[in-house]
Length: 374
Ligand SMILES: [Zn+2]
Image 1: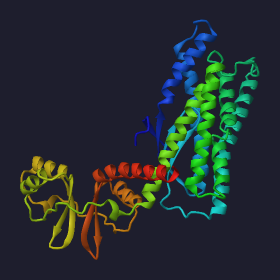
Image 2: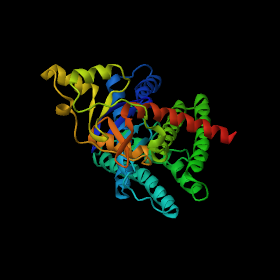
Image 3: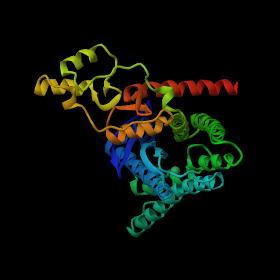
Image 4: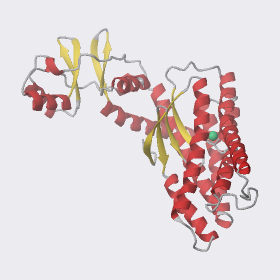
């Protein structure tokens, strides 16, 4: 997914990515520090400030994800922005609650974040006050690289308050969308929330140009987050609604277990496929990849496909969803799924062709939507 983010690691089984806006932040903090202190800004101090914001956002998002777990939603990945995070959930084993309960769940999930930030702010106030040093907690400017303890308190307070703005996908915007979803279907509710969010982002960006530059930064973040979230939702709906028969390859090459590896490689060279079903008569007996054939040839010389093919594989049916195929692929760490009907091989789905069809399908849906709106 083109998401303008880079992976930074895993936390409690969740892939964590940092969004591009996080890399603009140090420059931005440095610039603010510089203009406040007449060129007396220091790099390490400013980086510590960015670190504080990162940790506060990460904790805010952890609160959301822990709450989501309680509702049976399993977080897979999260993209962190300096104000919020966009999380992707694995909804495969979730029993979807009734619409009436769904919107209440959304509101609860949204409120958890600001409450957590508020709790962290109080904790920070407690610690700072107990330290007995005068940090001028309530004196403007609140976010200041020269006063990191004060910034710790205010970063959390700002996160709690700003996230309540009705700008989707900030928490306030999620609550707004939940209310829309009482009368509209999910996609329409999201669209309405996103357009309100875009308007707010626009106003913030413009207002920031004439007043505090941090407003512009907030506007940029809100706008980016809304784009990300919308794209994730399109991706999710493609996964849920597209059947394998719409995307499977029906014109494909197969190998026989009795083929020698050299023959198999020869066939593979003349095909665009990276993965092959291995078929005996009309029975599916295994799968093998071009890479596996090459590796086996290099390591042990010529042999038979039978000996090196993968005999454990999952099959899907033509009416299975794209999402279920994706999960089978990632769970088995394999790159091909045979599609069968009455035990007969009727198509294949490979990781390679999924990637292509996903982006094509997402574009097609977007076009259809734009057409239906105009
Ligand atoms: Zn939040």
